[in-house]
Image 1 (cartoon, rainbow, N blue to C red):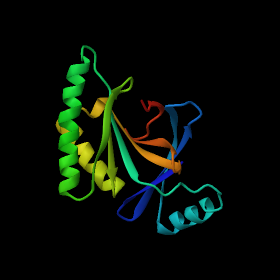
Image 2: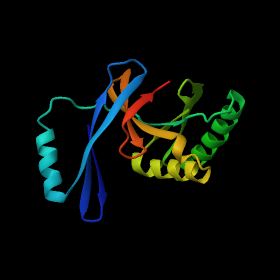
Image 3: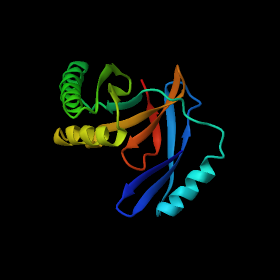
Length: 169
């Protein structure tokens, strides 16, 4: 998986390997980061267009997962999830960037899904909300990558350079 982000004149290119062979889990490994100017980025796009896989065109979704801390019980997590998802949904709707879709408590923590129209702009709102609550160190944010209408996997966007297993439950 390759992800590119822009910073003024150069683009940051991040390379990851994502293993989706286990149900409800994905193992992501950060490989390397490079920079490219616009011409290099266009060459990379041309080379990658020779691959035959194209993501299914579906809704853009952000998956926000807050992992529980020691001594936090389900009621504490439920309250935290409810307050945080309301705050994020309100801001996404205000900025016309998306809306709340679903949430639950699972073995991975407090899970929140948001349908969004612009991943990067919505991610900024989510990062601001978790930062204000000092939850940055125990949060994973992923985007859903559709493979067909009813199948997908997740690419972890935050924390940066994520390497590890993401429990999607």
